[in-house]
Length: 85
Image (cartoon, rainbow, N blue to C red; front, side, top):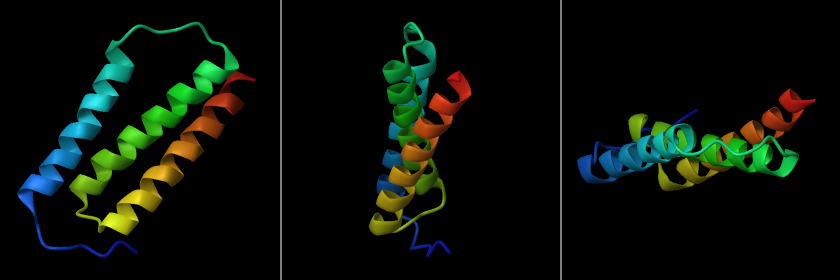
């Protein structure tokens, strides 16, 4: 369960903007060839950016933001490799 903390517009807004910027760079930037390592790295970065974005939206504590961001990043990395095969 996510413990919400009080709204801190600077912190939450910064997390949201970093997440949106990361997603935009990944999606609008050059698309590399589909080598397994590159696909896995893109999945990891996409999951990390999404985790940061959602941490700002749901006002997660610092520890929860770290754990959820790493979990999403690893999950997207594994999922992208599975999707390739």
